[in-house]
Length: 354
Ligand SMILES: C[S@@+](CC[C@H](N)C(=O)[O-])C[C@H]1O[C@@H](n2cnc3c(N)ncnc32)[C@H](O)[C@@H]1O
Image (cartoon, rainbow, N blue to C red; front, side):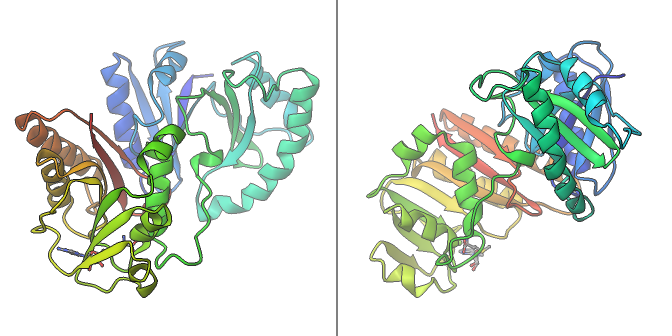
Protein backbone atom coordinates (compact mmCIF):
# COMPACT_ATOMS: atom_id res chain seq x y z
CA UNK A 1 0.00 0.00 0.00
CA UNK A 2 1.15 3.53 -0.75
CA UNK A 3 1.40 6.05 2.04
CA UNK A 4 -0.84 9.07 1.60
CA UNK A 5 -2.09 12.23 3.22
CA UNK A 6 -5.84 12.65 3.49
CA UNK A 7 -7.09 16.23 3.68
CA UNK A 8 -10.73 17.22 4.20
CA UNK A 9 -11.91 20.49 2.70
CA UNK A 10 -15.03 22.39 1.75
CA UNK A 11 -16.70 20.66 -1.23
CA UNK A 12 -15.68 22.53 -4.38
CA UNK A 13 -12.26 23.53 -2.99
CA UNK A 14 -10.47 20.25 -3.74
CA UNK A 15 -8.31 21.98 -6.40
CA UNK A 16 -7.13 24.66 -3.95
CA UNK A 17 -6.51 22.07 -1.25
CA UNK A 18 -4.44 19.93 -3.66
CA UNK A 19 -2.44 22.90 -4.98
CA UNK A 20 -1.62 24.04 -1.46
CA UNK A 21 -0.50 20.60 -0.29
CA UNK A 22 1.54 20.10 -3.46
CA UNK A 23 3.37 23.36 -2.74
CA UNK A 24 4.09 22.35 0.88
CA UNK A 25 5.33 18.93 -0.17
CA UNK A 26 7.74 20.47 -2.68
CA UNK A 27 8.94 23.03 -0.08
CA UNK A 28 9.96 20.11 2.12
CA UNK A 29 11.91 18.48 -0.70
CA UNK A 30 9.35 15.70 -1.16
CA UNK A 31 7.50 14.43 -4.22
CA UNK A 32 3.96 13.20 -4.71
CA UNK A 33 0.68 13.71 -6.47
CA UNK A 34 -2.87 14.54 -5.45
CA UNK A 35 -6.05 12.74 -6.42
CA UNK A 36 -8.83 15.27 -6.13
CA UNK A 37 -12.35 14.58 -7.33
CA UNK A 38 -14.33 17.82 -7.71
CA UNK A 39 -17.10 18.12 -5.14
CA UNK A 40 -15.90 15.15 -3.04
CA UNK A 41 -14.88 17.23 0.02
CA UNK A 42 -11.44 15.64 0.37
CA UNK A 43 -8.21 14.91 -1.45
CA UNK A 44 -5.81 11.96 -1.22
CA UNK A 45 -2.18 12.97 -1.68
CA UNK A 46 0.23 10.11 -2.40
CA UNK A 47 3.81 10.68 -1.28
CA UNK A 48 6.47 8.87 -3.28
CA UNK A 49 9.08 9.24 -0.52
CA UNK A 50 8.69 6.11 1.58
CA UNK A 51 8.21 6.69 5.30
CA UNK A 52 8.11 10.50 5.01
CA UNK A 53 4.37 11.16 5.49
CA UNK A 54 4.61 11.20 9.28
CA UNK A 55 7.53 13.64 9.27
CA UNK A 56 5.64 15.86 6.84
CA UNK A 57 2.45 15.83 8.96
CA UNK A 58 4.45 16.55 12.13
CA UNK A 59 5.95 19.65 10.55
CA UNK A 60 2.62 21.16 9.62
CA UNK A 61 0.92 23.21 12.33
CA UNK A 62 -2.87 23.19 12.47
CA UNK A 63 -2.92 26.78 11.16
CA UNK A 64 -0.29 26.32 8.46
CA UNK A 65 -2.71 25.28 5.74
CA UNK A 66 -5.54 27.43 4.41
CA UNK A 67 -7.88 25.02 2.65
CA UNK A 68 -7.46 21.64 4.39
CA UNK A 69 -9.81 21.33 7.38
CA UNK A 70 -8.13 18.19 8.59
CA UNK A 71 -5.00 16.29 7.71
CA UNK A 72 -4.10 12.72 8.57
CA UNK A 73 -1.74 10.10 7.19
CA UNK A 74 -2.99 6.80 5.90
CA UNK A 75 -1.35 3.61 4.65
CA UNK A 76 -3.90 3.73 1.80
CA UNK A 77 -7.47 3.00 0.77
CA UNK A 78 -9.03 -0.25 1.98
CA UNK A 79 -11.54 -1.26 -0.72
CA UNK A 80 -14.06 -4.11 -0.68
CA UNK A 81 -14.10 -4.37 3.10
CA UNK A 82 -15.95 -7.59 3.99
CA UNK A 83 -19.40 -6.58 5.30
CA UNK A 84 -19.26 -9.45 7.81
CA UNK A 85 -16.01 -8.15 9.35
CA UNK A 86 -14.78 -4.69 8.51
CA UNK A 87 -13.13 -4.37 11.89
CA UNK A 88 -10.23 -6.84 11.47
CA UNK A 89 -8.61 -5.18 8.41
CA UNK A 90 -9.20 -1.67 9.76
CA UNK A 91 -7.69 -2.45 13.16
CA UNK A 92 -4.70 -4.14 11.46
CA UNK A 93 -4.16 -1.01 9.33
CA UNK A 94 -4.39 1.29 12.36
CA UNK A 95 -2.01 -0.89 14.37
CA UNK A 96 0.50 -0.76 11.51
CA UNK A 97 0.67 2.99 12.13
CA UNK A 98 0.76 3.38 15.90
CA UNK A 99 0.69 1.38 19.10
CA UNK A 100 -1.83 3.46 20.99
CA UNK A 101 -4.36 6.13 20.19
CA UNK A 102 -5.79 9.01 22.20
CA UNK A 103 -9.12 8.99 20.34
CA UNK A 104 -11.03 7.28 17.56
CA UNK A 105 -12.97 9.29 14.99
CA UNK A 106 -15.05 7.50 12.37
CA UNK A 107 -15.71 10.16 9.75
CA UNK A 108 -16.85 10.86 6.23
CA UNK A 109 -16.77 13.80 3.81
CA UNK A 110 -18.80 16.96 4.44
CA UNK A 111 -20.95 16.63 1.30
CA UNK A 112 -24.69 16.08 0.78
CA UNK A 113 -24.00 12.64 -0.71
CA UNK A 114 -21.84 11.54 2.23
CA UNK A 115 -24.32 12.78 4.86
CA UNK A 116 -26.21 9.47 4.75
CA UNK A 117 -22.96 7.69 5.64
CA UNK A 118 -22.69 9.59 8.94
CA UNK A 119 -25.33 7.40 10.59
CA UNK A 120 -23.37 4.35 9.52
CA UNK A 121 -20.15 5.93 10.87
CA UNK A 122 -21.77 6.57 14.26
CA UNK A 123 -23.04 3.00 14.54
CA UNK A 124 -19.80 1.47 13.32
CA UNK A 125 -17.67 3.49 15.74
CA UNK A 126 -19.14 1.60 18.74
CA UNK A 127 -17.89 -1.96 17.99
CA UNK A 128 -14.64 -0.58 16.57
CA UNK A 129 -14.00 1.45 19.71
CA UNK A 130 -14.78 -1.58 21.85
CA UNK A 131 -12.30 -3.72 19.90
CA UNK A 132 -9.53 -1.11 20.24
CA UNK A 133 -10.26 -0.77 23.96
CA UNK A 134 -10.17 -4.53 24.50
CA UNK A 135 -6.79 -4.63 22.76
CA UNK A 136 -5.54 -1.87 25.10
CA UNK A 137 -5.06 0.54 22.17
CA UNK A 138 -7.29 3.45 23.21
CA UNK A 139 -6.29 5.69 26.07
CA UNK A 140 -8.18 8.98 26.34
CA UNK A 141 -5.73 10.25 28.97
CA UNK A 142 -2.70 9.93 26.72
CA UNK A 143 -3.28 13.19 24.84
CA UNK A 144 0.09 13.13 23.11
CA UNK A 145 -0.71 9.84 21.37
CA UNK A 146 -1.91 10.03 17.76
CA UNK A 147 -5.63 10.11 17.04
CA UNK A 148 -7.09 7.27 14.96
CA UNK A 149 -9.25 8.21 11.95
CA UNK A 150 -11.38 6.00 9.74
CA UNK A 151 -12.59 8.02 6.76
CA UNK A 152 -15.40 6.15 4.98
CA UNK A 153 -16.01 6.78 1.27
CA UNK A 154 -18.77 4.14 1.25
CA UNK A 155 -19.78 1.43 3.71
CA UNK A 156 -17.13 -0.87 2.20
CA UNK A 157 -14.27 1.54 1.41
CA UNK A 158 -12.30 3.60 3.92
CA UNK A 159 -8.98 5.29 4.55
CA UNK A 160 -7.69 4.36 8.02
CA UNK A 161 -5.02 6.64 9.45
CA UNK A 162 -3.61 8.81 12.21
CA UNK A 163 -3.28 12.50 12.97
CA UNK A 164 -1.14 14.23 15.58
CA UNK A 165 -2.24 16.69 18.27
CA UNK A 166 -1.09 20.28 17.49
CA UNK A 167 -0.73 19.28 13.83
CA UNK A 168 -4.38 18.69 13.05
CA UNK A 169 -7.84 20.02 13.73
CA UNK A 170 -9.16 19.28 17.23
CA UNK A 171 -12.70 18.84 15.84
CA UNK A 172 -14.54 15.78 14.50
CA UNK A 173 -14.52 16.00 10.66
CA UNK A 174 -12.53 19.22 11.10
CA UNK A 175 -15.78 21.07 11.87
CA UNK A 176 -16.35 23.15 15.02
CA UNK A 177 -20.00 22.74 16.03
CA UNK A 178 -21.21 26.22 16.95
CA UNK A 179 -24.81 27.00 17.74
CA UNK A 180 -26.36 30.05 16.14
CA UNK A 181 -27.23 32.40 19.03
CA UNK A 182 -30.94 33.27 18.72
CA UNK A 183 -30.44 36.94 19.57
CA UNK A 184 -27.65 37.58 17.05
CA UNK A 185 -28.88 39.67 14.10
CA UNK A 186 -27.27 37.55 11.36
CA UNK A 187 -25.91 34.06 10.72
CA UNK A 188 -22.58 35.69 9.79
CA UNK A 189 -22.03 36.00 13.54
CA UNK A 190 -20.66 32.44 13.58
CA UNK A 191 -17.78 33.40 11.25
CA UNK A 192 -16.27 35.69 13.87
CA UNK A 193 -16.94 33.25 16.71
CA UNK A 194 -15.23 30.48 14.74
CA UNK A 195 -12.33 32.75 13.77
CA UNK A 196 -11.61 33.43 17.45
CA UNK A 197 -11.87 29.72 18.25
CA UNK A 198 -9.49 28.84 15.45
CA UNK A 199 -6.93 31.66 15.55
CA UNK A 200 -6.69 32.28 19.30
CA UNK A 201 -5.72 29.92 22.08
CA UNK A 202 -8.03 29.82 25.15
CA UNK A 203 -5.47 32.00 26.96
CA UNK A 204 -5.42 34.56 24.17
CA UNK A 205 -9.22 34.63 24.10
CA UNK A 206 -9.26 35.41 27.82
CA UNK A 207 -6.60 38.10 27.44
CA UNK A 208 -7.63 39.73 24.17
CA UNK A 209 -11.43 39.66 24.35
CA UNK A 210 -12.01 41.59 27.53
CA UNK A 211 -14.81 43.93 28.60
CA UNK A 212 -13.88 47.57 28.06
CA UNK A 213 -11.72 46.88 25.00
CA UNK A 214 -12.32 48.87 21.81
CA UNK A 215 -13.16 47.52 18.38
CA UNK A 216 -14.09 48.81 14.94
CA UNK A 217 -16.41 46.72 12.76
CA UNK A 218 -16.10 47.72 9.08
CA UNK A 219 -19.18 46.67 7.09
CA UNK A 220 -21.01 45.90 10.31
CA UNK A 221 -24.70 45.77 9.33
CA UNK A 222 -26.91 44.17 10.47
CA UNK A 223 -24.49 43.43 13.31
CA UNK A 224 -23.69 39.73 13.71
CA UNK A 225 -19.98 40.41 14.28
CA UNK A 226 -20.70 43.47 16.44
CA UNK A 227 -23.03 41.24 18.51
CA UNK A 228 -20.10 38.88 19.29
CA UNK A 229 -18.05 41.77 20.62
CA UNK A 230 -20.88 43.43 22.54
CA UNK A 231 -21.60 40.06 24.17
CA UNK A 232 -18.07 40.22 25.56
CA UNK A 233 -18.47 43.79 26.79
CA UNK A 234 -16.27 45.24 24.02
CA UNK A 235 -17.13 48.77 22.81
CA UNK A 236 -17.73 48.80 19.05
CA UNK A 237 -17.65 51.49 16.39
CA UNK A 238 -19.89 49.96 13.71
CA UNK A 239 -19.15 51.44 10.27
CA UNK A 240 -21.80 50.80 7.61
CA UNK A 241 -24.37 52.74 5.62
CA UNK A 242 -26.83 49.99 6.40
CA UNK A 243 -28.92 49.68 9.56
CA UNK A 244 -27.54 48.12 12.73
CA UNK A 245 -29.91 45.99 14.83
CA UNK A 246 -31.68 48.27 17.38
CA UNK A 247 -30.87 45.85 20.25
CA UNK A 248 -27.16 46.51 19.64
CA UNK A 249 -27.59 50.29 19.51
CA UNK A 250 -29.55 50.09 22.77
CA UNK A 251 -26.71 48.20 24.48
CA UNK A 252 -24.86 51.48 25.00
CA UNK A 253 -21.69 49.84 23.68
CA UNK A 254 -22.18 50.59 19.97
CA UNK A 255 -21.46 53.76 18.07
CA UNK A 256 -22.85 53.69 14.49
CA UNK A 257 -20.98 55.54 11.73
CA UNK A 258 -22.75 55.73 8.36
CA UNK A 259 -19.75 56.21 6.17
CA UNK A 260 -17.46 54.44 3.71
CA UNK A 261 -15.20 51.97 5.52
CA UNK A 262 -12.38 52.47 3.03
CA UNK A 263 -12.16 56.17 3.93
CA UNK A 264 -12.93 55.92 7.63
CA UNK A 265 -10.17 57.07 9.98
CA UNK A 266 -10.43 56.06 13.64
CA UNK A 267 -10.05 58.65 16.40
CA UNK A 268 -8.55 56.20 18.89
CA UNK A 269 -6.34 53.13 18.83
CA UNK A 270 -8.49 49.97 18.69
CA UNK A 271 -7.78 46.56 20.16
CA UNK A 272 -9.57 45.00 17.20
CA UNK A 273 -10.58 45.89 13.67
CA UNK A 274 -12.88 43.36 12.00
CA UNK A 275 -14.10 43.56 8.42
CA UNK A 276 -16.72 41.54 6.55
CA UNK A 277 -17.25 43.70 3.46
CA UNK A 278 -18.18 42.15 0.11
CA UNK A 279 -15.43 43.70 -2.02
CA UNK A 280 -12.49 42.67 -4.17
CA UNK A 281 -10.18 40.62 -1.92
CA UNK A 282 -7.11 42.73 -2.65
CA UNK A 283 -8.94 45.90 -1.66
CA UNK A 284 -9.88 44.36 1.68
CA UNK A 285 -6.33 43.05 2.17
CA UNK A 286 -5.00 46.57 1.49
CA UNK A 287 -7.42 47.93 4.08
CA UNK A 288 -6.27 45.44 6.74
CA UNK A 289 -2.62 46.24 5.97
CA UNK A 290 -3.35 49.99 6.18
CA UNK A 291 -4.86 49.59 9.65
CA UNK A 292 -1.82 47.78 10.96
CA UNK A 293 0.72 49.94 9.10
CA UNK A 294 -0.85 53.05 10.67
CA UNK A 295 -1.00 51.29 14.03
CA UNK A 296 -4.73 52.00 14.21
CA UNK A 297 -5.36 48.60 15.77
CA UNK A 298 -3.53 45.75 17.50
CA UNK A 299 -5.14 42.94 15.54
CA UNK A 300 -7.70 42.33 12.86
CA UNK A 301 -9.91 39.65 11.41
CA UNK A 302 -11.09 40.12 7.85
CA UNK A 303 -13.01 38.07 5.38
CA UNK A 304 -11.91 37.76 1.76
CA UNK A 305 -14.65 36.88 -0.74
CA UNK A 306 -12.85 34.83 -3.37
CA UNK A 307 -13.28 35.05 -7.14
CA UNK A 308 -14.64 32.06 -9.12
CA UNK A 309 -11.24 31.04 -10.44
CA UNK A 310 -7.63 30.96 -9.23
CA UNK A 311 -8.79 31.24 -5.64
CA UNK A 312 -5.61 29.94 -4.01
CA UNK A 313 -3.56 32.31 -6.17
CA UNK A 314 -5.76 35.20 -5.06
CA UNK A 315 -5.15 34.46 -1.37
CA UNK A 316 -1.41 34.29 -2.05
CA UNK A 317 -1.56 37.66 -3.82
CA UNK A 318 -3.39 39.17 -0.85
CA UNK A 319 -0.79 37.75 1.57
CA UNK A 320 2.01 39.18 -0.58
CA UNK A 321 0.40 42.57 -0.71
CA UNK A 322 0.05 42.70 3.09
CA UNK A 323 3.62 41.48 3.57
CA UNK A 324 5.02 44.14 1.24
CA UNK A 325 3.09 46.96 2.84
CA UNK A 326 3.96 46.00 6.42
CA UNK A 327 7.60 45.29 5.67
CA UNK A 328 7.92 48.68 3.97
CA UNK A 329 6.37 50.27 7.07
CA UNK A 330 8.79 48.36 9.32
CA UNK A 331 5.98 46.62 11.22
CA UNK A 332 6.43 43.20 12.82
CA UNK A 333 3.29 41.17 12.36
CA UNK A 334 1.78 37.71 12.17
CA UNK A 335 -0.57 36.75 9.36
CA UNK A 336 -2.68 33.61 8.97
CA UNK A 337 -5.40 32.64 6.53
CA UNK A 338 -7.89 29.84 6.96
CA UNK A 339 -11.00 28.74 5.16
CA UNK A 340 -13.29 28.33 8.15
CA UNK A 341 -16.23 25.95 8.25
CA UNK A 342 -18.63 28.93 8.24
CA UNK A 343 -16.85 30.52 5.27
CA UNK A 344 -18.48 29.79 1.92
CA UNK A 345 -16.63 31.10 -1.16
CA UNK A 346 -14.37 32.94 1.27
CA UNK A 347 -11.36 32.70 3.52
CA UNK A 348 -10.71 34.52 6.78
CA UNK A 349 -7.51 36.40 7.52
CA UNK A 350 -6.03 37.07 10.95
CA UNK A 351 -3.40 39.78 11.22
CA UNK A 352 -1.79 41.08 14.39
CA UNK A 353 1.10 43.18 15.57
CA UNK A 354 3.82 40.99 17.04
C1 LIG B 1 -21.73 40.64 4.62
S1 LIG B 1 -22.39 42.11 5.25
C2 LIG B 1 -21.72 42.16 6.86
C3 LIG B 1 -22.42 41.25 7.81
C4 LIG B 1 -21.99 41.49 9.25
N1 LIG B 1 -20.60 41.06 9.45
C5 LIG B 1 -22.85 40.74 10.21
O1 LIG B 1 -22.34 39.84 10.90
O2 LIG B 1 -24.04 41.04 10.32
C6 LIG B 1 -21.46 43.31 4.43
C7 LIG B 1 -21.78 44.74 4.84
O3 LIG B 1 -20.78 45.58 4.31
C8 LIG B 1 -21.36 46.84 4.02
N2 LIG B 1 -20.47 47.55 3.09
C9 LIG B 1 -20.19 47.29 1.81
N3 LIG B 1 -19.31 48.19 1.33
C10 LIG B 1 -19.04 49.05 2.34
C11 LIG B 1 -18.21 50.19 2.49
N4 LIG B 1 -17.45 50.62 1.46
N5 LIG B 1 -18.19 50.81 3.67
C12 LIG B 1 -18.93 50.38 4.71
N6 LIG B 1 -19.73 49.30 4.63
C13 LIG B 1 -19.78 48.64 3.46
C14 LIG B 1 -22.72 46.48 3.47
O4 LIG B 1 -23.60 47.58 3.63
C15 LIG B 1 -23.11 45.27 4.31
O5 LIG B 1 -23.91 45.67 5.39
